[in-house]
Image (tube, rainbow, N blue to C red; front, side, top):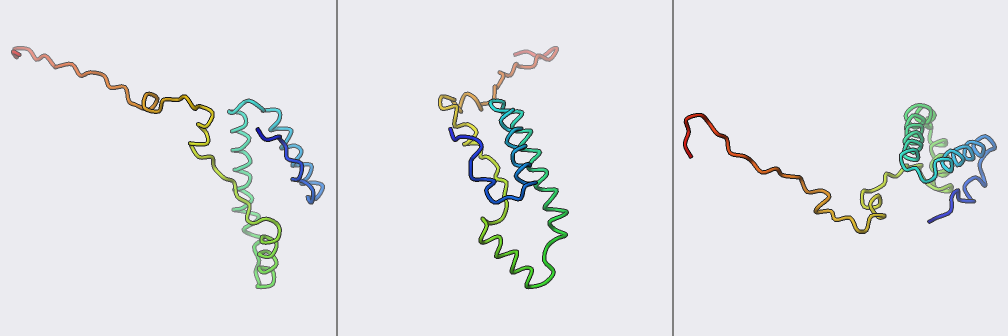
Length: 122
């Protein structure tokens, strides 16, 4: 397992973002071992990411070529576009190597009983 938090994340952040990063780390470490609580934290972070992108960031997009170039250059130099990756089902199930998928996912089919109608012979 990888150690958390990584040490190189906040090297070049402004002080307020560094403090925010530390708070997020504390929240994550406080939920260590509890997948449901960690999932709630990830959902919150994803929602914050979406809210900022769709409002404040969208409104701040460049309105001329020079500002657009500066933004694109920043994206290129400093690590690309922010992205929150979703986990694939296979990665979620990696800790269950003995899981029998055929048994786990097969539908339980109940045998059908024949209908008996009054006056009907079989």
